[in-house]
Length: 242
Image 1: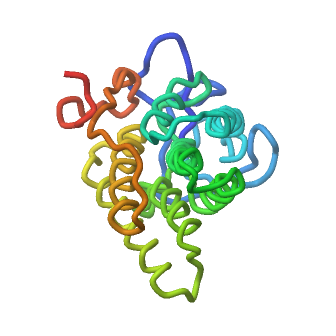
Image 2: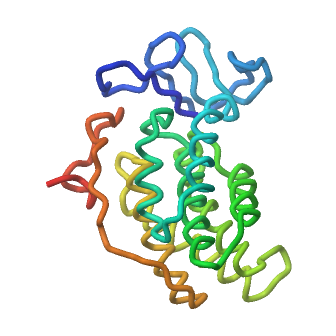
Image 3: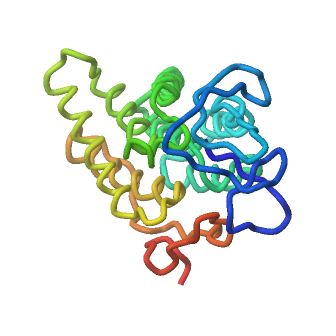
């Protein structure tokens, strides 16, 4: 997973949040104890000192802040909710915390429109946690935002293994969201992925399920480009401030 040091100046390199050294991205994992909780995990991202932070420890504070926002907001505009989540001090520039923002923002907007409940939001977050794992966007080609939004469609349609149109609709939604993510890759940017995915998912809700939510194309203008550790795509990104 990506654990980024939060120093006063933006860094162009991802650093260990414990010792500040540049992170090492591997293609083969190794079993290491989490430096925070001690539980063993299969680590693909470490630092030269051997520090490893598991997903649960890495995202705990940010997830608490995200959940506090999505359960308290009255907005029916998913992008607006996500934008507020981006401003949280505990949120790193990159990381699977963004998957919880995407799924949570969409389900919260639906709840506030009378199309869901707090328990639906909790279920989306639970399902997201099963498939959103740090660094796996590069290792498997599946960004955690895709199953997070798929969880929303699954909850709305009642999809489960063995269903017919419900599962097909959910899988097609995940496919379209994945396409919108892949179109913005090079290098990856979780914040751009969230915004593009929410726009795609909002349109799919209307076309596939008949649920209308506010959608304003590219209303988000990113204020985080200088923080991107791999280098912002700048003018290649539709959310870059011109």
